[in-house]
Structure formats: C-alpha cells, structure tokens
Length: 398
Image (cartoon, rainbow, N blue to C red; front, side, top):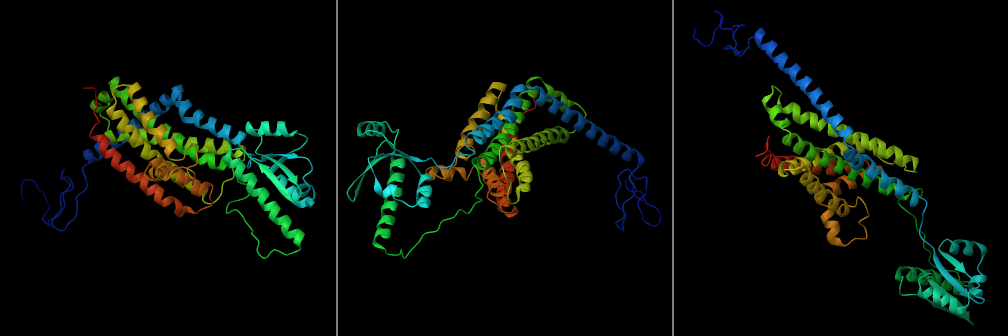
C-alpha cells in the first residue's frame, strides 16, 4: 500500500481517506466528517453573507433619494405625462375657413359631412382679410371659396404637412362630387384598416420605452455608484479580506438589481394600466426581458464604476451612455420617421433590443418567440462587457 492512498485488501478506498479519491474500481470514498463540517460552515457563511450584503444594498438604494427618483419616479413621470396628455388625442384636424357660400361642401350628404368633419374643422363668418391673415400666421391650414364650378383653395407654406392634408382631402371631395354629378358608379374603391387594435392609445407605445429606460438607469447607476462608493470607503477592501466568497458579493448586487427592476416593471405597468394601457400578446415575456436587460446594463454600470474614480464621474459617465442611448433607441420618441442611420444605430444598442422586445410582446401582439433574439443579444452583450470591465476593476483605489 502506498503512503498516500490507503485501501482495504479488496482495493476499496478508505472511507477516512481525506483526499476522497477513488479506488481502482472507480468508487469514491465518503468525505471525512471534518470536511463535511467545513463545507457546511462555508455554505452557511456564504448564505449569511449574501443575505447581509443584499439587505445592505437594498437599504442603500431605498435611502438614496436620487437613485429612487431617477429609477422610479423619473420614468413614471413621463408615463403619466404622455398617458394623460396624449392618450385621447387622435390626428389633429385641419382648420379651413369658408369664404361665402361653398355649395360643394354645403350640399354634401350628412354622412359625408360627418366623415369630413373628423378630418377638417370648418371656420365660417370670417372676412377675406381676416382669413388670409390667420392663414399667414398658420392659425388656419386653408381658405376655401367657390367661384362657379371652380373651388379656390389657399394654403400656407408654413405648415406643409397641414397644407398637404387639406389639399388631399378636398381633392378627394371634388372627385367624389364629380362622380356623383355625372351619375357614373365608381369602378374602384379603397378600404383601409389598421393591423393593431383600434383601441390602441399613445400610452401603449410610451410604456415599453419608459420601462426600458427605467431599467437601464436603475441598473447602470446602481452598479456604478455602489462600486465607486464602496471602493472609496474601503468596503471592497474589507470584503476582500473577510472570509466572504467573492461570488456572494457579486450575486447579492445582481439579486438586488433584478429585484429593483421587477419592482419597476410592476409599478410602471400598474400605473400605465390605470391610464389606459392594454396588454396584448405574450406580455408576460416582459419579465425575462427585464431580467436580461438588467444584466446588460449592470455590465454597463460595472464598467463605469471600474473606470470612474469618484461618484460624480461615475454618474456623469453613466448619463453620457444611457441618455443618448435612450434617444437613439426609441425609448423617448418613435424612430419610424427618423433618418435611416439613426434606425441602424438603434439596432446595435442594448436599449434598442430591450425596447423593441417589450413593444413586440406587450403592444404589437406578437408571441414569445419575438423576445428570443433581444434576450440572446442582451445576454451576449452582458457577457462581453463584463469581461471588458474586469480588466479595469480594482478592489481599492490606486
């Protein structure tokens, strides 16, 4: 029998062997009692350290008024503003002044007048000079008068969108009237409908963007400022010297950030539903999207906190990253009408992936599969940026 491997005559490993190595038959001996006690002690210490650190981080977040404001109340403020101001607002009506008797408009059938009234608001009783003066100031979108069989429309170049809308609507009225006068039946017709629920309101497009922005701000600022402050106060140094596993420090920070993000999600959706939000499709996928998005922006916060030497620098760096990203990702404003290069940038930003995934599943009625790509991209982003951040990370100030 060798000195370092003890076995019985049958070749089985000695149960008291502290190495726990296997015998020739591949059977492993029972770990010694002292080893089990040590393992249990370390596990209990890790759990206790995790609970203590998570509690300390949570209390730190709650007591930091600035963090609470920018994480919860700032995005909530936008949801309430957009939800209350724009919820019931449809397309704006064009304002057109009628000079004299415009019989083409006056003789329209009642249903045609009603339909036209949803697009154009008629103003009558104005003199020609007053009407033209209001048109120059863009208080009106058009001035209409009739001379014989000819309709004369004046528009302003100051509001080209309103002018084009009025011209298109009135041109359609004239063509329809000509068809009716000649007695010919129209051969073609156009029937338009929306692919979304007709009850959709502005808040349903605002809420996913604000959720994405709130998650980004909460995770980035929380990780960055905590890291800088703990390093500045030598908390990280004491944690490193204490018998606490590094994994407990990291997991406690991640757990608190995920809990804050889920609280944000619940509060934002709850308030938005009071303002008219209707969840559609696989809205519940917003939960895993929130978790993966939080991990992505935790890595951003880790990088900011590793580079910055002061809290002010960390906050400034976090703002420099998250605020432009919010505008370029469509969190504040829709990007459908933006230049192509802005839309291209939004497709490579983690907040853009997060906002698009939330819109697809919460508003556009798509299924869980729509969230798979955003979740995969945010997780990959988190892994890569965390590796980059570890190269700059230090336990204490230089």
